[in-house]
Structure formats: structure tokens, C-alpha cells
Image: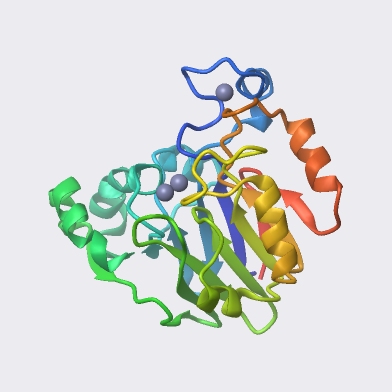
Length: 262
Ligand SMILES: [Zn+2]
Ligand SMILES: [Zn+2]
Ligand SMILES: [Zn+2]
């Protein structure tokens, strides 16, 4: 079986289209569903099973769309609703299909929040904490949580095999120096591009332009934009994002279902 990293969703918190929004980006996504973006998450396929990275509220729809039937481990970047809201979707997978607990690696500080939000899911998950800098191995693939800048305790994940290195940072504002040092030169940097043009929340998120600059500064093979909101200062339609990415080599606009072979 081939190892891979698949983007399950590439939207920011509001999703695209948002039910309450009629901006050009949302209108485009309503008319052409291929331009819609579910909330951000990923699945890493390894020789020994699937690792779910974040459980966005759209999780059920995403798993059906990608025909993924097994989840063997879960790693959470941070405890914001657009990343954890779908954990409850796994209750009946655990109870009816898997019938054994799924290891769930949380940010250490999110343990009380998990217990408060999902007191009944200790039946379904083997709840653990990840540690920054520790390398977790799954066959010939490792995943390492690295510190991101997002206001609350947040990881980006460095995913490595002997052949490839991929860094997944859906929610961050730049990178601490220690993280940047480890991410330098990766094959793919999949990066927070919540905004386009004006960055409304520069302490916790990035714009597409800033993500592209970060990729250049870190000499990555390819910068892939994700966690795109598109509705803020100006609506952004897909052709505008594509034009922005096309201005420089090695930049791609992420989309739901995009796959990277590892
Ligand atoms: Zn909109
Ligand atoms: Zn967040
Ligand atoms: Zn988010």
C-alpha cells in the first residue's frame, strides 16, 4: 500500500460556501461544488493504518466522500471548534465498527476541554497527549508535533518517510525559530492561508501572500495553501487564488481531496 497524505478539508472556520454568506466566493462554490471547501483536516495513510489529523465538523461527509472506513490513530493540532467539532462523529464508529478504543493524541492543555465537551467519548477513545518534538512512528512513517503560533497551544505536524518530508500547519501565524529550523527544506509546506490581502488576525493566522513568503524563506519544494476563508476584506474566487499561486513557481492552491504521495 502506498503511503500518502490527503487533505480532507481546506476551508477555514466558516466553510465555503458559508450558509450566511453571498460573497462572490460563496456564490461560486454554490454554483460549482468543486470549489467548495469543508473545514480543514487530513488523513495520513501508512502501512499500518490511517491517521486522522483533526476532526472538523464536516468529518462524516469527508470520510464518506473519500471512502475511508478505518481510523487507527488521531492527532489533533489544537482545540478550536473547526478542528475538534467532528470528534463526536466517531462515537458509533467506535461502538459499532471498531469495537476497540482509538488512540487520540490531544494537545496536553486540551485534556480538560475534551473531558468537558465529550464526557461520553472516553468509551471510544484512548485519550493521550502528544509532546512537542517527539517523533511518533507508524511503520516507516513518523509524525512530529512542532510548535505553531496560534494563541492557544497548537501544533503543526512534520510527517516524514525516508523519501519525503511534509509539514502541515493549518493554523499558525509564521513559525517559531525552533520549528522553522526543523521545517526548512521540506518537500511540501501545507500552510495557513486564511486571508487574502488584508490579514485581520495577524497574531494567529496568515494571508496567502504571507504563506507564500514563508515557503520561500524556508526553501520548501512546494507551498500549498490551506485553511482558506476567502470571505473577509474581499471575496476571492478560485480563479484569483489560482492567479496568485501561478505568479511563482512551487505554489499550489490546496483543495479538498488533494493527495501527496509519501
Ligand atoms: Zn462568502
Ligand atoms: Zn484555530
Ligand atoms: Zn482553524
